[in-house]
Amino acid sequence: MNYELFSFFMLGVAALFAGFIDAVVGGGGLIQVPALFSLYPDTAPASLFGTNKISSLVGTSNSAIRYVRSVRMPWRAALPAAAAAFIFAYLGSMSVAWLPIRLLRPMILALLIGAAIYTFWRKEFGTVHEPRHCGRREFFRALLLGAAIGFYDGFFGPGAGSFLIFLFIRVFGFDFLHASAASKVVNVATNLASIGFFIPHGYYLPLVAVMMAAANLTGSFIGTRMALRHGSGFVRRLFFGVVCVLIIKFAWDTFA
Image (cartoon, rainbow, N blue to C red; front, side, top):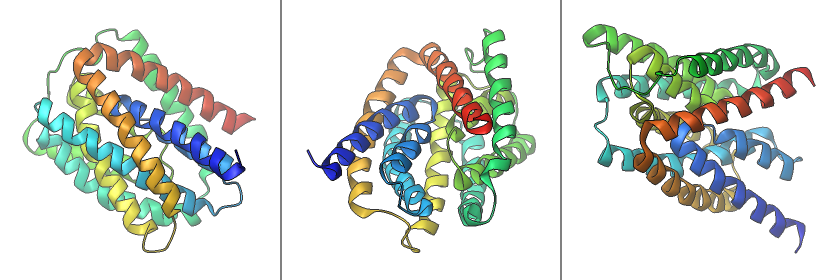
């Protein structure tokens, strides 16, 4: 097996697993982005980010459609968040070239640790779906949430889906299943916005993107089905595991 075929195979495996994880709790970028950078070290970072976004969009869109068909979607929070996220994800993608990512890592690490501790100690966190806002308050909080996470997702990405789920639960009172469903709508918007910047500028690898998209789609089918079958308890456990892995990853990148 030559190196190119080996790279395709490994990226396919990574995209499959990323699609599964992303469909349930987000964090697929944690798998796909390092795999792309490891196997294509001489490729421009923007092209690798663009390829990742194309793959993610396919899997996330499938998850969003399946959640919409099976879960009563909290549209009043999801749609304003998605609209703001779309705009700010595009701005974030434009900022990749001139904002130093290393300055964000300590802050992201602190936020992840806080989310993990909160989720671990609050055993009831995300187990009951009790939306707590309505009207203008819900609308403006959704806009703010979408803007913040949208910019981060367009600029960097790994962990954005997990942050979305945590915030939909903490701010709006959703359970893990509804928070995961709402996060997929927002993720579709951020991926579309980022692709709207990367593709016109030629920042993607066409063949790699198509292969990874197919694998990501397969993983998203499996992940969404398991989340819908096993409910919020399953999503909560996987969420905590993914956040712990994210903490290790960001700690290594920050202090190594």
